[in-house]
Length: 350
Image (cartoon, rainbow, N blue to C red; front, side, top):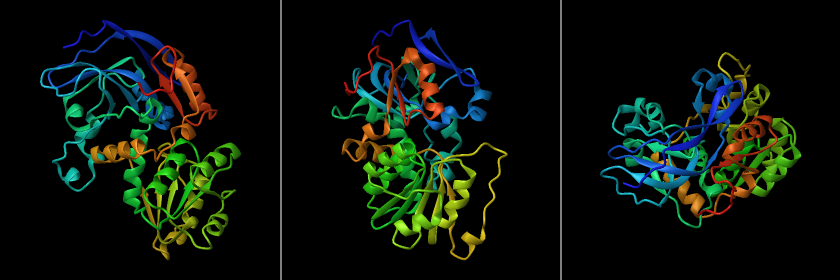
């Protein structure tokens, strides 16, 4: 077993948007476990949800990591030095929910996690995660691109659930990082036309470069016009704006699907005109996280170049400036922030 340093830097979230960089002991791998030296980790929208994260504080955030295997426990087949994607949650694959294809609702799924979190120099990966969802990343995939495997996997799970496929017409509401990935994923799955609804001109431009047709303004009429006069087969709502969620029902065509991908704070209600859904048999869905088959599909798409990381990742910040990384992401100045644990953040995958 390779020697692991005694201490490491971690970015600790204390609540109310406050992070500090601290020193902690480096975790050790037990039998079947590995320790990964993190190269980069993206900041997810869920990391910014204070109503969700503050009760857990102090906590080390980050669940979109890529890094190199630094130490292995007994019985691990992975080699020291291999660059890997690590999924923070894994299901049991044998319970009724897993057998029904609902792995993310498995009780073990939310009980498994990396130690302490991706915004750290080293993480310990438990045996279950090593067995099911640690994937070797090809050399040509950059670290930035590899941090998109987890969010892309979540999106692919949702798009399959919604029925996106060859010939689909798709509307994406919100062109933040997840909206941009939704567009590229829909294109990769064969969607014939993707319309984006995004008020910010800069983000709208990124969406067009990702493969969407821009429909300015939050109104179903412009979306339908951009789709040739009909509604969308799938509408992916990547914002928690109540107005956007309400209007999304009008964007869907007959038998269309509206999928909620951004969660509003519990207790906040959204008024919906269900008449817009009833007579056209519109389905309203929500989706959460991703399973092992989704991460493998995501890695394959990233490796094939279907996802343009440079369109999504706008800011790269060193770990010691994690507080600034959080601020950039929380303020909306950045589309996507990736935190690099190296002293000099690099685009390179090695």
